[in-house]
Length: 429
Image 1 (cartoon, one colour):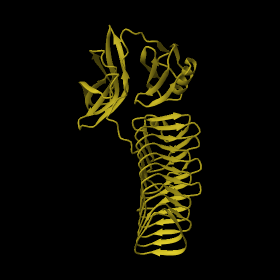
Image 2 (cartoon, helix red, strand yellow):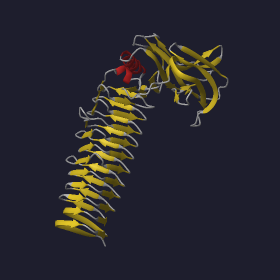
Image 3 (cartoon, helix red, strand yellow):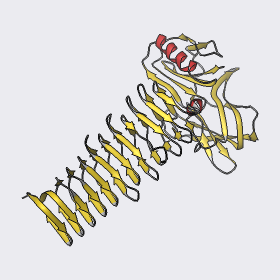
Image 4 (spheres, helix red, strand yellow):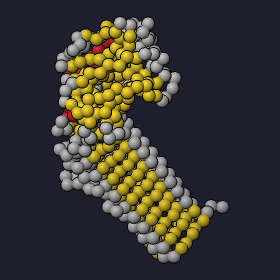
Protein backbone atom coordinates (compact mmCIF):
# COMPACT_ATOMS: atom_id res chain seq x y z
CA UNK A 1 0.00 0.00 0.00
CA UNK A 2 1.33 3.44 -0.95
CA UNK A 3 1.16 6.15 1.69
CA UNK A 4 1.71 9.89 1.57
CA UNK A 5 4.23 11.30 4.05
CA UNK A 6 3.84 15.04 4.69
CA UNK A 7 6.79 16.71 6.43
CA UNK A 8 5.70 20.06 7.91
CA UNK A 9 8.70 21.38 9.79
CA UNK A 10 12.42 21.70 9.11
CA UNK A 11 14.57 18.57 8.88
CA UNK A 12 18.17 17.65 8.22
CA UNK A 13 19.04 14.31 6.65
CA UNK A 14 22.65 13.58 7.53
CA UNK A 15 22.77 9.77 7.38
CA UNK A 16 21.50 7.20 4.92
CA UNK A 17 17.71 7.03 4.84
CA UNK A 18 15.31 5.12 2.60
CA UNK A 19 11.58 5.77 2.32
CA UNK A 20 9.80 3.01 0.39
CA UNK A 21 6.29 2.80 -1.06
CA UNK A 22 5.76 6.44 -0.20
CA UNK A 23 4.71 9.64 -1.90
CA UNK A 24 6.71 12.30 -0.12
CA UNK A 25 5.63 15.93 0.40
CA UNK A 26 8.08 18.16 2.21
CA UNK A 27 8.42 21.76 3.30
CA UNK A 28 12.02 22.60 4.33
CA UNK A 29 14.71 19.94 4.07
CA UNK A 30 18.50 19.84 3.97
CA UNK A 31 20.19 16.66 2.77
CA UNK A 32 23.80 16.24 3.82
CA UNK A 33 23.85 12.45 3.54
CA UNK A 34 21.93 10.09 1.25
CA UNK A 35 18.14 10.12 0.96
CA UNK A 36 16.30 7.63 -1.25
CA UNK A 37 12.59 8.01 -1.93
CA UNK A 38 10.95 5.04 -3.65
CA UNK A 39 7.95 6.98 -4.88
CA UNK A 40 6.98 10.49 -5.98
CA UNK A 41 8.38 13.59 -4.25
CA UNK A 42 6.76 17.06 -3.98
CA UNK A 43 8.55 20.06 -2.46
CA UNK A 44 6.69 23.06 -1.01
CA UNK A 45 9.49 25.13 0.55
CA UNK A 46 13.27 25.06 0.07
CA UNK A 47 15.16 21.79 -0.26
CA UNK A 48 18.96 21.85 -0.22
CA UNK A 49 20.83 18.78 -1.53
CA UNK A 50 24.42 18.84 -0.30
CA UNK A 51 24.73 15.07 -0.42
CA UNK A 52 22.70 12.68 -2.57
CA UNK A 53 18.96 12.57 -3.25
CA UNK A 54 17.51 9.68 -5.27
CA UNK A 55 13.85 9.88 -6.27
CA UNK A 56 12.62 6.64 -7.81
CA UNK A 57 9.57 8.33 -9.20
CA UNK A 58 8.31 11.79 -10.17
CA UNK A 59 9.68 15.03 -8.69
CA UNK A 60 7.50 18.15 -8.50
CA UNK A 61 9.64 21.09 -7.36
CA UNK A 62 6.96 23.41 -6.01
CA UNK A 63 9.45 25.21 -3.79
CA UNK A 64 13.03 26.33 -4.27
CA UNK A 65 15.54 23.50 -4.71
CA UNK A 66 19.34 23.79 -4.59
CA UNK A 67 21.43 20.90 -5.88
CA UNK A 68 24.98 21.22 -4.60
CA UNK A 69 25.57 17.46 -4.59
CA UNK A 70 23.80 14.84 -6.73
CA UNK A 71 20.11 14.54 -7.58
CA UNK A 72 18.77 11.58 -9.57
CA UNK A 73 15.13 11.45 -10.70
CA UNK A 74 14.12 8.24 -12.47
CA UNK A 75 10.91 9.65 -13.97
CA UNK A 76 9.81 13.21 -14.83
CA UNK A 77 10.81 16.54 -13.27
CA UNK A 78 8.40 19.48 -12.98
CA UNK A 79 9.91 22.88 -12.00
CA UNK A 80 7.53 25.50 -10.52
CA UNK A 81 9.98 27.67 -8.54
CA UNK A 82 13.71 28.46 -8.41
CA UNK A 83 15.77 25.36 -9.17
CA UNK A 84 19.55 25.82 -8.90
CA UNK A 85 22.00 23.14 -10.07
CA UNK A 86 25.59 23.57 -8.90
CA UNK A 87 26.22 19.82 -8.77
CA UNK A 88 24.90 16.97 -10.92
CA UNK A 89 21.29 16.39 -12.00
CA UNK A 90 20.18 13.20 -13.78
CA UNK A 91 16.59 12.92 -15.05
CA UNK A 92 15.40 9.59 -16.44
CA UNK A 93 12.23 11.06 -17.98
CA UNK A 94 11.33 14.51 -19.28
CA UNK A 95 11.63 18.01 -17.77
CA UNK A 96 8.89 20.66 -17.74
CA UNK A 97 9.68 24.21 -16.56
CA UNK A 98 6.47 25.96 -15.48
CA UNK A 99 5.64 29.52 -16.60
CA UNK A 100 6.84 30.87 -13.21
CA UNK A 101 9.74 28.45 -12.83
CA UNK A 102 13.45 29.21 -13.18
CA UNK A 103 15.97 26.44 -13.86
CA UNK A 104 19.62 27.49 -13.51
CA UNK A 105 22.57 25.23 -14.29
CA UNK A 106 25.52 27.08 -12.79
CA UNK A 107 29.16 27.05 -13.85
CA UNK A 108 30.50 23.62 -12.89
CA UNK A 109 27.02 22.13 -12.77
CA UNK A 110 25.67 19.47 -15.12
CA UNK A 111 22.27 18.22 -16.19
CA UNK A 112 21.41 15.14 -18.27
CA UNK A 113 17.81 14.60 -19.45
CA UNK A 114 17.00 11.21 -21.01
CA UNK A 115 13.87 12.39 -22.79
CA UNK A 116 12.58 15.86 -23.83
CA UNK A 117 12.65 19.27 -22.13
CA UNK A 118 9.90 21.91 -22.39
CA UNK A 119 10.71 25.39 -21.05
CA UNK A 120 7.69 27.62 -20.46
CA UNK A 121 9.61 29.49 -17.78
CA UNK A 122 13.21 30.71 -17.71
CA UNK A 123 16.25 28.51 -18.31
CA UNK A 124 19.79 29.75 -17.67
CA UNK A 125 22.88 27.69 -18.55
CA UNK A 126 26.45 28.31 -17.44
CA UNK A 127 27.43 24.64 -17.08
CA UNK A 128 26.80 21.55 -19.23
CA UNK A 129 23.31 20.45 -20.28
CA UNK A 130 22.42 17.40 -22.40
CA UNK A 131 18.86 16.81 -23.63
CA UNK A 132 18.70 13.46 -25.40
CA UNK A 133 15.47 14.16 -27.29
CA UNK A 134 13.67 17.43 -28.22
CA UNK A 135 14.00 20.87 -26.61
CA UNK A 136 11.07 23.29 -26.83
CA UNK A 137 11.24 26.89 -25.59
CA UNK A 138 7.79 28.46 -25.14
CA UNK A 139 6.62 31.84 -26.34
CA UNK A 140 7.07 33.60 -22.99
CA UNK A 141 10.31 31.91 -22.01
CA UNK A 142 13.89 33.12 -21.91
CA UNK A 143 16.80 30.78 -22.53
CA UNK A 144 20.24 32.17 -21.72
CA UNK A 145 23.49 30.36 -22.49
CA UNK A 146 26.22 32.15 -20.56
CA UNK A 147 30.00 32.19 -20.75
CA UNK A 148 31.33 28.63 -20.67
CA UNK A 149 27.83 27.19 -21.06
CA UNK A 150 27.28 24.19 -23.30
CA UNK A 151 23.91 22.87 -24.46
CA UNK A 152 23.54 19.67 -26.50
CA UNK A 153 20.18 18.64 -27.96
CA UNK A 154 19.95 15.13 -29.43
CA UNK A 155 16.94 15.72 -31.68
CA UNK A 156 15.07 18.92 -32.64
CA UNK A 157 15.15 22.35 -30.99
CA UNK A 158 12.02 24.51 -31.39
CA UNK A 159 12.46 28.08 -30.18
CA UNK A 160 9.34 30.16 -29.72
CA UNK A 161 10.57 32.42 -26.93
CA UNK A 162 13.02 35.22 -26.34
CA UNK A 163 16.31 33.45 -26.76
CA UNK A 164 18.69 35.75 -24.87
CA UNK A 165 21.85 34.17 -26.26
CA UNK A 166 24.83 35.47 -24.31
CA UNK A 167 25.15 38.80 -22.61
CA UNK A 168 27.57 41.19 -24.28
CA UNK A 169 30.60 39.62 -22.61
CA UNK A 170 29.44 36.01 -22.54
CA UNK A 171 29.90 33.22 -25.06
CA UNK A 172 28.98 29.52 -25.19
CA UNK A 173 27.96 26.76 -27.58
CA UNK A 174 24.84 24.88 -28.55
CA UNK A 175 24.85 21.71 -30.64
CA UNK A 176 21.63 20.32 -32.16
CA UNK A 177 21.52 16.81 -33.63
CA UNK A 178 18.28 17.44 -35.54
CA UNK A 179 16.66 20.64 -36.83
CA UNK A 180 16.60 24.07 -35.18
CA UNK A 181 13.36 25.98 -35.86
CA UNK A 182 13.02 29.62 -34.90
CA UNK A 183 9.24 29.73 -34.68
CA UNK A 184 6.88 32.70 -34.91
CA UNK A 185 7.77 35.08 -32.01
CA UNK A 186 11.11 33.29 -31.58
CA UNK A 187 13.96 35.75 -31.02
CA UNK A 188 17.60 34.64 -30.99
CA UNK A 189 20.66 36.84 -30.57
CA UNK A 190 24.13 35.35 -31.05
CA UNK A 191 26.94 37.67 -30.00
CA UNK A 192 30.71 37.53 -30.25
CA UNK A 193 31.95 33.99 -29.54
CA UNK A 194 28.51 32.37 -29.62
CA UNK A 195 28.09 29.22 -31.72
CA UNK A 196 24.92 27.50 -32.94
CA UNK A 197 25.89 24.22 -34.65
CA UNK A 198 22.93 22.33 -36.16
CA UNK A 199 23.17 19.01 -38.02
CA UNK A 200 19.92 18.90 -40.01
CA UNK A 201 19.17 22.54 -40.81
CA UNK A 202 18.11 25.91 -39.39
CA UNK A 203 14.58 27.06 -40.28
CA UNK A 204 13.51 30.68 -39.75
CA UNK A 205 9.72 30.90 -39.74
CA UNK A 206 7.66 34.00 -40.50
CA UNK A 207 7.56 36.36 -37.53
CA UNK A 208 10.84 35.10 -36.06
CA UNK A 209 14.02 37.15 -35.53
CA UNK A 210 17.60 35.91 -35.65
CA UNK A 211 20.49 38.31 -35.07
CA UNK A 212 24.07 37.15 -35.62
CA UNK A 213 26.42 39.80 -34.30
CA UNK A 214 30.03 40.22 -35.37
CA UNK A 215 32.01 37.23 -34.06
CA UNK A 216 28.96 34.94 -33.73
CA UNK A 217 28.59 31.75 -35.78
CA UNK A 218 25.60 29.76 -37.03
CA UNK A 219 25.82 26.57 -39.09
CA UNK A 220 22.87 24.68 -40.57
CA UNK A 221 24.78 21.49 -41.40
CA UNK A 222 23.29 19.19 -44.04
CA UNK A 223 19.98 21.08 -44.11
CA UNK A 224 21.51 24.53 -44.51
CA UNK A 225 19.69 27.70 -43.44
CA UNK A 226 16.14 28.09 -44.78
CA UNK A 227 14.40 31.44 -44.35
CA UNK A 228 10.60 31.09 -44.55
CA UNK A 229 9.89 34.79 -44.02
CA UNK A 230 11.77 35.40 -40.78
CA UNK A 231 14.11 38.32 -40.11
CA UNK A 232 17.82 37.49 -40.36
CA UNK A 233 20.42 40.11 -39.48
CA UNK A 234 24.12 39.32 -39.81
CA UNK A 235 27.36 41.04 -40.89
CA UNK A 236 27.13 39.09 -44.17
CA UNK A 237 23.60 37.78 -44.71
CA UNK A 238 24.45 36.27 -48.10
CA UNK A 239 27.13 34.14 -46.39
CA UNK A 240 24.51 32.85 -43.95
CA UNK A 241 22.34 31.67 -46.84
CA UNK A 242 25.19 29.40 -47.97
CA UNK A 243 24.56 27.38 -44.80
CA UNK A 244 27.17 28.77 -42.40
CA UNK A 245 28.33 32.24 -41.40
CA UNK A 246 30.81 33.43 -38.81
CA UNK A 247 34.43 32.84 -37.82
CA UNK A 248 33.88 29.21 -36.74
CA UNK A 249 32.72 28.10 -40.20
CA UNK A 250 35.08 25.69 -41.85
CA UNK A 251 36.63 26.76 -45.14
CA UNK A 252 35.13 24.46 -47.72
CA UNK A 253 37.82 22.64 -49.73
CA UNK A 254 35.70 22.98 -52.87
CA UNK A 255 33.16 25.64 -53.77
CA UNK A 256 30.65 23.73 -55.91
CA UNK A 257 28.73 26.00 -58.27
CA UNK A 258 26.24 23.44 -59.60
CA UNK A 259 25.65 19.74 -60.26
CA UNK A 260 23.14 18.58 -62.91
CA UNK A 261 22.34 15.66 -65.24
CA UNK A 262 22.23 16.62 -68.92
CA UNK A 263 21.48 14.83 -72.22
CA UNK A 264 23.59 15.04 -75.39
CA UNK A 265 23.20 12.90 -78.50
CA UNK A 266 21.06 10.39 -76.65
CA UNK A 267 23.56 10.02 -73.79
CA UNK A 268 23.22 11.14 -70.16
CA UNK A 269 26.02 13.02 -68.39
CA UNK A 270 26.63 14.06 -64.79
CA UNK A 271 28.11 17.56 -64.95
CA UNK A 272 29.37 19.90 -62.26
CA UNK A 273 31.37 23.08 -61.87
CA UNK A 274 33.64 24.43 -59.12
CA UNK A 275 34.52 28.08 -58.49
CA UNK A 276 37.55 27.29 -56.31
CA UNK A 277 39.36 24.18 -55.08
CA UNK A 278 41.71 23.72 -52.12
CA UNK A 279 43.74 20.49 -51.79
CA UNK A 280 41.13 18.69 -53.87
CA UNK A 281 42.18 15.14 -54.73
CA UNK A 282 38.99 14.49 -56.66
CA UNK A 283 35.40 13.28 -56.72
CA UNK A 284 33.85 9.89 -56.12
CA UNK A 285 30.81 9.30 -58.33
CA UNK A 286 28.16 7.63 -56.17
CA UNK A 287 24.74 6.33 -57.21
CA UNK A 288 21.78 4.41 -55.81
CA UNK A 289 18.66 2.68 -57.02
CA UNK A 290 15.26 4.23 -56.31
CA UNK A 291 14.35 1.24 -54.11
CA UNK A 292 17.35 1.34 -51.75
CA UNK A 293 18.69 3.79 -49.18
CA UNK A 294 22.47 3.44 -49.58
CA UNK A 295 24.68 4.98 -52.25
CA UNK A 296 27.41 2.87 -53.86
CA UNK A 297 30.75 3.77 -55.46
CA UNK A 298 30.85 3.96 -59.26
CA UNK A 299 34.04 5.76 -60.29
CA UNK A 300 36.58 8.46 -59.38
CA UNK A 301 37.32 11.72 -61.21
CA UNK A 302 40.58 13.52 -60.36
CA UNK A 303 40.38 17.12 -59.13
CA UNK A 304 42.67 20.10 -59.79
CA UNK A 305 44.38 20.33 -56.39
CA UNK A 306 44.32 24.01 -55.43
CA UNK A 307 42.98 26.51 -57.95
CA UNK A 308 40.94 29.72 -57.99
CA UNK A 309 39.89 29.22 -61.62
CA UNK A 310 36.51 27.81 -62.64
CA UNK A 311 36.69 24.07 -63.40
CA UNK A 312 34.03 22.09 -65.27
CA UNK A 313 33.60 18.32 -65.10
CA UNK A 314 31.54 15.88 -67.17
CA UNK A 315 31.02 12.17 -66.54
CA UNK A 316 29.09 9.89 -68.88
CA UNK A 317 26.43 7.74 -67.21
CA UNK A 318 26.73 4.33 -68.82
CA UNK A 319 23.56 2.80 -67.37
CA UNK A 320 20.03 3.97 -66.63
CA UNK A 321 19.66 1.49 -63.78
CA UNK A 322 20.48 4.09 -61.12
CA UNK A 323 18.00 6.84 -60.27
CA UNK A 324 20.00 9.11 -57.92
CA UNK A 325 23.56 10.44 -58.07
CA UNK A 326 25.86 12.51 -55.88
CA UNK A 327 29.55 13.44 -55.55
CA UNK A 328 31.84 12.72 -52.63
CA UNK A 329 34.57 15.35 -52.82
CA UNK A 330 37.77 14.08 -51.19
CA UNK A 331 40.77 16.11 -49.93
CA UNK A 332 44.34 14.88 -50.00
CA UNK A 333 44.14 14.51 -46.20
CA UNK A 334 41.07 12.27 -46.42
CA UNK A 335 38.42 14.81 -45.40
CA UNK A 336 35.32 14.85 -47.59
CA UNK A 337 32.05 16.64 -48.39
CA UNK A 338 28.93 15.40 -50.19
CA UNK A 339 27.22 17.28 -53.00
CA UNK A 340 23.45 17.73 -53.39
CA UNK A 341 21.63 14.70 -54.81
CA UNK A 342 20.41 14.83 -58.43
CA UNK A 343 17.94 12.47 -60.13
CA UNK A 344 18.18 10.79 -63.53
CA UNK A 345 15.21 11.32 -65.81
CA UNK A 346 14.18 8.45 -68.06
CA UNK A 347 15.63 9.01 -71.51
CA UNK A 348 12.28 8.17 -73.12
CA UNK A 349 10.51 10.91 -71.17
CA UNK A 350 10.49 14.51 -72.22
CA UNK A 351 10.92 17.25 -69.65
CA UNK A 352 7.47 18.62 -68.76
CA UNK A 353 8.74 22.00 -67.54
CA UNK A 354 10.91 24.80 -68.94
CA UNK A 355 12.15 27.96 -67.22
CA UNK A 356 12.69 31.33 -68.92
CA UNK A 357 14.43 33.72 -68.97
CA UNK A 358 17.49 31.76 -67.90
CA UNK A 359 19.84 33.41 -66.88
CA UNK A 360 17.51 35.74 -64.98
CA UNK A 361 17.68 38.82 -62.77
CA UNK A 362 15.17 37.15 -60.48
CA UNK A 363 11.74 36.89 -62.12
CA UNK A 364 11.12 33.64 -64.00
CA UNK A 365 8.25 32.04 -65.91
CA UNK A 366 7.56 28.32 -66.08
CA UNK A 367 6.12 26.45 -69.04
CA UNK A 368 4.50 23.16 -68.09
CA UNK A 369 1.93 21.67 -65.75
CA UNK A 370 1.34 18.79 -63.41
CA UNK A 371 3.95 19.21 -60.67
CA UNK A 372 2.96 17.79 -57.28
CA UNK A 373 5.89 19.14 -55.28
CA UNK A 374 8.98 21.27 -55.80
CA UNK A 375 12.21 22.30 -54.11
CA UNK A 376 14.58 25.18 -54.87
CA UNK A 377 18.20 24.64 -53.83
CA UNK A 378 21.22 26.90 -53.88
CA UNK A 379 24.54 25.68 -55.24
CA UNK A 380 25.48 24.22 -51.84
CA UNK A 381 22.39 22.02 -51.63
CA UNK A 382 20.56 24.21 -49.10
CA UNK A 383 16.78 24.02 -49.59
CA UNK A 384 15.47 27.57 -50.00
CA UNK A 385 11.91 26.48 -50.83
CA UNK A 386 10.04 23.18 -50.44
CA UNK A 387 6.29 22.80 -50.91
CA UNK A 388 3.65 20.27 -52.02
CA UNK A 389 0.56 20.58 -54.22
CA UNK A 390 1.11 24.24 -55.10
CA UNK A 391 -0.65 25.81 -58.10
CA UNK A 392 1.73 26.50 -61.00
CA UNK A 393 0.99 30.24 -60.85
CA UNK A 394 1.96 30.37 -57.19
CA UNK A 395 5.05 28.27 -57.92
CA UNK A 396 6.22 30.98 -60.38
CA UNK A 397 5.65 33.71 -57.81
CA UNK A 398 7.39 31.82 -55.01
CA UNK A 399 10.45 30.96 -57.09
CA UNK A 400 10.70 34.48 -58.55
CA UNK A 401 10.46 36.16 -55.14
CA UNK A 402 13.07 33.82 -53.66
CA UNK A 403 15.50 34.33 -56.54
CA UNK A 404 15.01 38.10 -56.43
CA UNK A 405 15.96 38.14 -52.74
CA UNK A 406 18.95 35.80 -53.19
CA UNK A 407 22.52 36.59 -54.30
CA UNK A 408 23.75 35.94 -57.83
CA UNK A 409 24.71 32.35 -58.50
CA UNK A 410 23.44 28.96 -59.61
CA UNK A 411 20.23 27.40 -58.31
CA UNK A 412 18.54 24.03 -58.89
CA UNK A 413 14.76 23.79 -59.24
CA UNK A 414 13.56 20.22 -58.64
CA UNK A 415 10.00 19.27 -59.64
CA UNK A 416 8.07 16.08 -58.95
CA UNK A 417 5.74 15.26 -61.86
CA UNK A 418 3.87 12.25 -63.22
CA UNK A 419 6.95 11.49 -65.34
CA UNK A 420 9.26 11.47 -62.32
CA UNK A 421 11.62 14.05 -60.89
CA UNK A 422 13.08 16.85 -63.01
CA UNK A 423 15.97 19.14 -62.11
CA UNK A 424 16.47 22.50 -63.86
CA UNK A 425 19.52 24.68 -63.33
CA UNK A 426 18.69 28.40 -63.04
CA UNK A 427 21.40 31.04 -63.23
CA UNK A 428 20.81 34.39 -61.52
CA UNK A 429 23.01 37.30 -62.48
